[in-house]
Image (cartoon, rainbow, N blue to C red; front, top):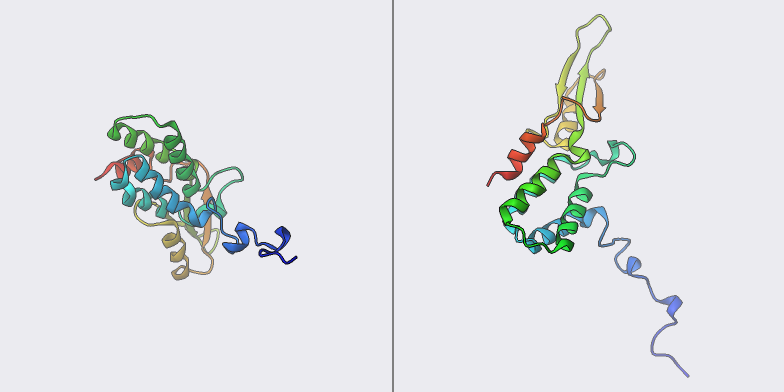
Length: 173
């Protein structure tokens, strides 16, 4: 007797069919963020949230173990709100989410290029401000700096965008 379908072991898995992609992988994260914003009635906020995510795009390989990257943090945050199904005022919900995003672990990082040829020379620092340029744009500046330039990255520090300025950015319409 011939089977119309191959044996179960011969069928490709969903990961095979998607060439290794999964709905929860990092590349799919922005699509889920947009979907969750729409489900929360915040579709008009998508561009601003994507701007926030663009600021920190690429920094994940520099984070401390256990610190979650921006897209995954926002995806999880929004997913929890969708699951809550609370009927909060949209303005209050947007503000609460903006505060959470501004205080995300990734938002606490600061970075600088330090330029100093010799120990006797004064050091010049070029600080990263995510509100002025994305992480990837900041790193691209390295190509125009002297060979002896060093990149310094730090966890929570004063040389980063303040939580208040990130909240203001996110709340702009």
